[in-house]
Amino acid sequence: MRTRSGRGAARERAVGGTDRTATGRYAAPGTLLGRWLVRGKDGRLAAYARTDAGLLRWTEIRPGGPDWAGPDFFPVANLTDLWVTQGADTYVHFLGRREVRQGEGPSAVDVVHAIQYQSGRPVTEWRSLGNPHKEREKAARLGIPAAAVSSSGIVHVFVRNAGGGLMLRRELPGGKWGPWTDIQGSLVQDPPAVVAHSSGRVEAMAGGQDLIMRWVQDQPDGEFRRALNIPVAVTRGTAAVLETAPDRATYYWTDPATGGIVAHRPGSWVIPLGGAPAGAPVAVLRAVLDGYDCTVLAHRDAEGQILLAVCGTEQEQSGLWWSPAGERSVGAPALEIDAYGRVVLAVIGEDGGLHIARQTDEGGLAMAPSVRV
Image (cartoon, rainbow, N blue to C red; front, side):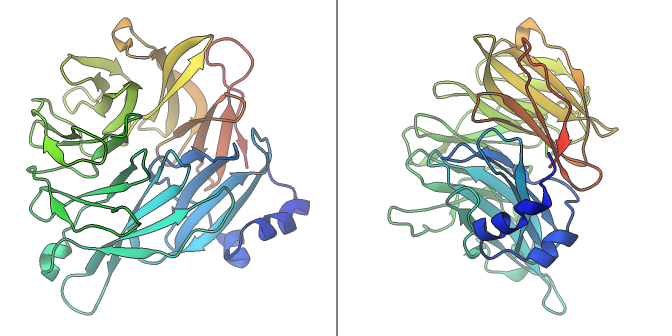
């Protein structure tokens, strides 16, 4: 529901470092990359978007809603792309690609990182993780960062380099960052899809020239090695991933030949799922529906409408059906489970506001109409 005016003072006290005047002016032109709807340790949901001038955040006032505070505004200049992810400790990490014009010649490009430690609290200062390239021309061609946080809290940042390979930088014990490492690859499409398994291992996948490349760890926080390529094409910018069994990932992407979504677990067949996505990753979530372990999927089509589908987890071959959610969005949707175990669908509407729809008490996945918060 729309936040009432009487909550304004409470919102201002809850979040230090926000610009209240700017908050009143900003509307989100689209969504972030990665998981932009998350649940904090206290059970409250938070959603993130951005403007040309910085980061926007909405936060549930109480776990399970329905009232929200925000948007709160956190200024950060010169970002071209922004990825958000959350660790098992519920810390929210932001990885941005920053591009700064410096007179003639290529722009100065680096990767920046900030953290939100608790629901509704300020975001830390943005710290530069640098650029793996020293030459300015190569540095300007750096790709879009993607990140995952292992169960030990180590942040793993992946980014395509100027030569089309994949670079990795991650934290070391104690909070310092190790060097950029070239983990190889060729003609990598960015951003990669990354997942942190419950086992502690991190896995990354990226499309290439009519193939899929994967990077895996044999042990938590260990070194990465290349897995066997998968000879399948991926539409750039559409890859998503979900842990669907202990230490096993299912990947989803748009098939460039058919325009539909497919699912794939390494070692098995590619499974067509239909749909007609508009060039963005499908949102995927595991949820218990009517006592069954299910996977919920949501995507935005070319007309801006959101469609939902459900299947038994790792049972995509049994079929699923896409149905309109009654929502329109200017970017990819997001899915999360709220404090009461309900599926929550979040979209950024054409009005630039956050719209939230929640699962009802009816059987299956019945969603109530969305409200702007």
